[in-house]
Image (tube, rainbow, N blue to C red):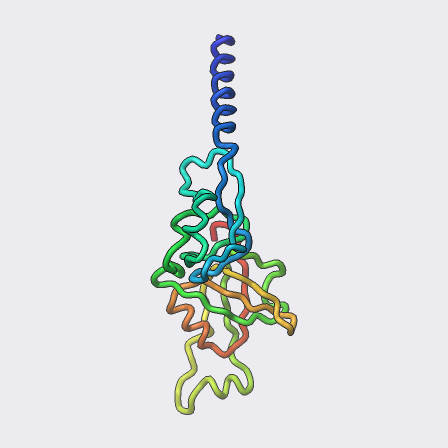
Length: 194
């Protein structure tokens, strides 16, 4: 019985090594720096990498570079990711029913180190001072409450005032409500599965 187990293990190791050697010299395109959806992909946006055993992925081979450079990114491309054929072509992002908005977030109103892909609750506080007077026309009722939505962080860049400008992906109707609100935005990061 022990000899049979050893034979099976030896066979697996041999096939694994042969497969690694067969794919060791395969070269594919990877993203060298972030590219926004709809942007034209340039020579400096892609680089060549070696990948062992890319089975099951629609990776673009390095010798097909001309099929990528000069075309548009269908979705945002993250630096370091491998280029897949479905990521190149007419913009397909954001998906139908979704929108991307940029919101200013003052210092202290978002968790430190907020990363791309993080899920957040977007809260807009009530407008104050001149913003409150401008936001509610005379004779009209104020909104039922400040807008609230769940969104995904697309990008976060520091501004000169110590805060951030955060790009968020969320439903169109929620994006419109958040973008048209006059109060300060706060972000609450959600844990996995929330």
